[in-house]
Image 1 (cartoon, rainbow, N blue to C red):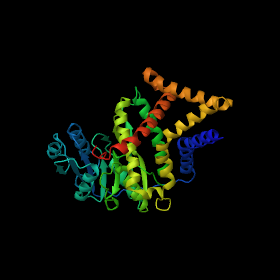
Image 2 (cartoon, one colour):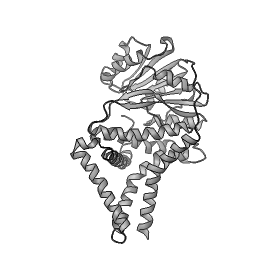
Image 3 (cartoon, one colour):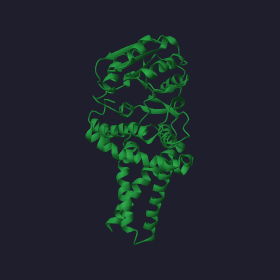
Image 4 (cartoon, one colour):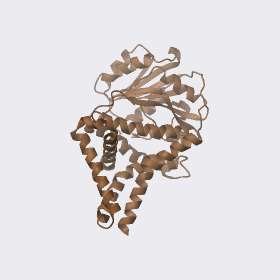
Length: 374
């Protein structure tokens, strides 16, 4: 009886997390949409970037911002160099395309501390939050500020797309991101998304909170604080930033471990996120973020219960066979890269890697409280 309860408890939560919740939020977006009232007003904007040893990408990024379709006198840039040992600060000072304010620090302080200083130095009514690596489409900023013309909207986020995503391990990364983006778009269309991509989002400067020291996931902390204050967080699908997907499991592991461990940190920094009355998007936050952190352990429970029950009923033997087929697909993606393009293989590989990284993230957070130092 215990094994049966464990099996259905784990199976039910996994099914809700990865299938039922996405379908429910997509259905709500279609049945009860909340359109954004877009406008044409062009407010002053400050683009904000924090950089640690980013000289290799910074010149191209500043050139990219220089050609954004936005009036020259309404957009300036603040670059905070977080104890960089390369020429990041010099590259930023040499830029001539848009006005650039450079904040340079002798020692590494972490992204949150630099963002707080950069926002304090910003002059724009709107903050355009960016990472140094991604290329932004020329019309992206106009599309984001059009959303902010709706007084109910506090954050407008762009869409992250991958360049050349169809080969090797990058195919599984792209498969996961398409799934994630569909959920975020549905959350946005039905009310509010609970997180955005740090590569491209705009926020009203008056709503930007002071980030707690060491915050890793500012792109979740900021939207949740804006939501808590009564404003919407929306995604603008046409505002595009282009990124390069991870080409190997090892490369993706570095990115995802920090992000997933940041979710554990986020709850410790803002425990109100766990309180239904204090968090207006509590169900979405738990369903979208927290249950995914539990899923590797639910998978272990599911596998253990299935094996324990396999000799008693054919259904549980079938479950064991299904788990075996899943493992075979994941292994196939590793040993036969051409087959990684097939949708079932891509989905299996993405699911397996994300859960492996989620399990490792817990120990990363426990063992590395200086995670914020990039």
